[in-house]
Image (cartoon, rainbow, N blue to C red; front, side, top):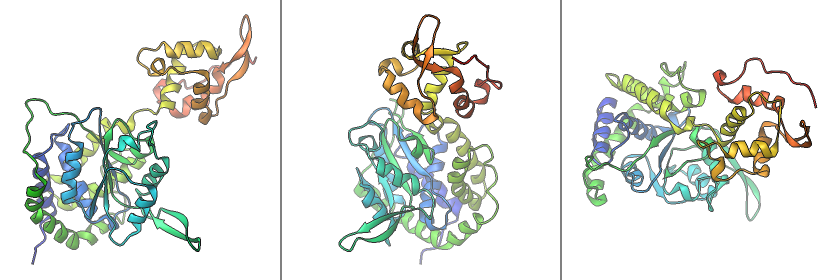
Length: 369
């Protein structure tokens, strides 16, 4: 008979184990890994699951190694270099719901990549919370069938992920090790045997604590997450509840990790659209209207922005601004009439999407064309 370890003991054990094989940007991230591993073993007791995003600018940063370590520890692991949306929602609806470990995401989840799968992004987005489904007509009868999308997912890749996935993710910035940072050699055949006792302890822990975790998440929101945005608070709450169950130093360690990750996360980076709105506000300051040609010239000249490297053209500019209900119009300048943009058309988007301290509280008025 396997006796269940205390929550604190199993968390400490996992954090010590991961530190042997990967160097992370901050020691607190090992605590996050331990909490995330435990959450996969009680996934059906939780109101949400955080996607784990392991992202790096270059290969050789330990992303795949960390996925391999997770494969030894999480509930029902499935490591894959790619997956179709149909495979994902069928797997999540199966009796053996896996913890999906997706590698090489830059080849199919990086916007702009040749293999980008927006339909897969949608399934991953929806599946962070129970109760989400996709509906398909199944041949040969074409009868409607619903499939669950809820389940734990870790994603590793180069570059970025779609903004909607990042909003549902705990983001780990992964970097190559320095010369003075050493780790233990990893051999799957050896570590699969070495981690067998940990897996047995995790199974015993889950059997004993499933209802305890569910109870912690059944009442008022877990305390200590007030500084997080709503969705970030939602995905962190199950991990914080597990830390509260552990007691001792773990509640404070988990909250410090949440603050650190959320404040440094690339999920907080502005989207291309918001970045463009901010740059347009800068270059249009003091002007009531501007021609499309002049606006593009000013944007493409900004050294710290990406537009000059693309470069941005009139069609691309209109495409990025369309979701904010901003369209080019025929405008009158001092010496000519041309296509361009009016400052007043940006006021609503600026007030909604730019930080309050960067947005004028009282938009200036202008004389209509």
